Amino acid sequence: MAVPVARKTKTSRSKPAPAVRRISPLRFLRRWLIRALLGAAVLLAVWVVSYKVINPPTTAYILSEKRYLGEIDRQWVDADLVAPVMLRSVVAAEDANFCLHTGFDLDAIKTAIDSGANRGASTITQQVVKNAFLWHGRNWGRKALEALLTPMVEMTWSKRRILEVYLNIAEFDEGVFGVHAAAWHYFGIGPESLSAQQAASLAMVLPAPKARSASNPTSSQQRRIALIQDGAQLIAKDGRAACFED
Image 1 (cartoon, rainbow, N blue to C red):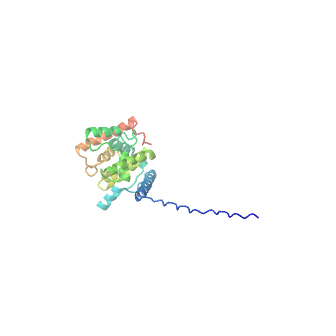
Image 2 (image 1 turned 90 degrees about the vertical axis):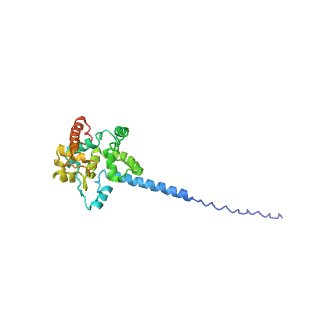
Image 3 (image 1 turned 45 degrees about the vertical axis):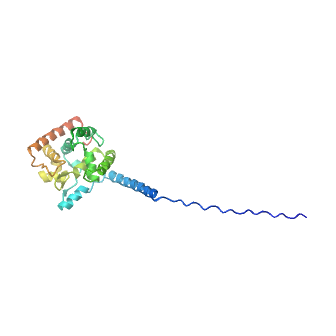
């Protein structure tokens, strides 16, 4: 009779506990910083694109002036209700190559650098970005954001829309913002009735409205007004107004 052989039982080996994955505080902070930056970039992009169809209710500078002065004069007006010569005049005065560049006028920048000028290279698009989305100042952080947002505005807005927003948020006298308020403030008429000389006079005060007057210009400012009138006629003839004309 065969003797049964005892089977060897397999000894169960205990599996090693899974290693606990530790995330270093520095890596955790970096991850959330990247997420925060991406989130901020998305919100900023949505804000920029929204102003393509939504009229900016106010700006940081307008709010600061309102706190300082107590009240400001401003009323939005569509570009269709502004005399076309006003649009041409502000382009002639501020950014004659407005229709030719995509946000940055490289020729103007080079000329400003070569001449050592403090101003003259900023395009209307850059001024819209600064006034509508950022703050006034010369620090590098603001300039970097301006350089980032300017192409975004050019890619998503029409040239006419850029000019329309500019004319509605620019300051024309202390506490007087936008071409509607400026036309009534200086000449007692609506922006649709501005003459070529009146439009050039309003464009002349930019970008130093607190130091210039459209209704009482100095002799040098009168010469500037005449130059703006000539420039407005010129860009109408040579096609540099085509991108924002109806």
